[in-house]
Image (cartoon, rainbow, N blue to C red; front, side, top):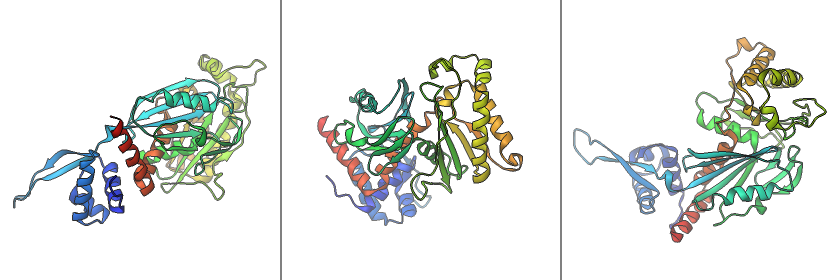
Amino acid sequence: MIRITDSLIKTLNFIWKKEKTYLMEISKETGLEKSTVSRSLNKLKDLNLIKKVDELSSTPQGGRKTTVFQFAYSIGHILGISVEQDGIEVALTDLAGKVISSKRISVMINEENIISQLNNVIESYSELDIYGIGISLPGIIDSKNGKIIYSKALNIRNFNLVSKIERKDNIPVYIENDSNCGALYFNLCNREKSKNILYFHISIPYYVNDGTGIGVGIIIKNRLYHGSNNYAGEVEIKKAMINDEKRISFEELRNYPIEKLLDNSREFLDYYSEKISNFISVFDPDTVLIGGNIVLLDNEFLDVFISQIKEKVFMFENRNIYLNHTSSKDFLTSRGAASLILHKMFSTKNGAEKFLEIYYNMKKRR
């Protein structure tokens, strides 16, 4: 094992963040001496964690060409998992956060089966080099201790989730609230344009006659806001999507013709558009996103929902707000869960040490 220094972490983190970079740029941006950066680059090259991808021409006065480096993003994978009451979404990414594959599993999740379902998902990727697992969940989450404090959607209270997850090589597992994951991921990809974000994660339950859950991920000036007690964005709303004596599953609802869907969910649309518009009027963000498994419904339904929200925001026409729904193909919360792992891994000394420990173990097995 090489010695992990603050300068090595700074260099590693900078190269990981940048698509391509070189010694002088790293030195200038990190404040590290060129000789220090050079030593760190040599260590990372010896470990095959960075690779030469280009050369910049020398100046007219002569001198060496400048070597351009890139992090070896393809050496391993991150598993991002989003748990909803009606199923699990999975995004497999490389070490840049680029999605390699994704899938959705439709199954009712609760305290009795959540561990077995998660372990089954993780086991299905056991042949790959997985460096970390991020899990997004509905409810109040104690990320530091890996615990679900309370999730109404999953009917779980005071549940030590992370300690029960099976994984090899002591791979790190982090959990976070789903709406926070969605907000965080969108912000990371759009930091210049979207600095103040409200991400509404709407979870339609397995049976749509039950109350529909909603959580709000809040980004203020590019920082995730948890609140004074870590409960920011958690609200309890019990409005069902459809009132019907017959139990209707979400899968059944997705097959409704659009006219029937809109007609049966009229009260739901009116109620939730009012609640969401009040949040927007108070916070006055630059970006508002509607996400969660609600985006699996017909786009025409979602467009009607967005229009109703706009109509109810106080003086919406005078505000510069981007308001839209995410795509069912975005896998926003599972990608957000994966990005949490990546940033913890490459931005802290403990994270870097854990990454290198796993890297060494995987090299030994090859």
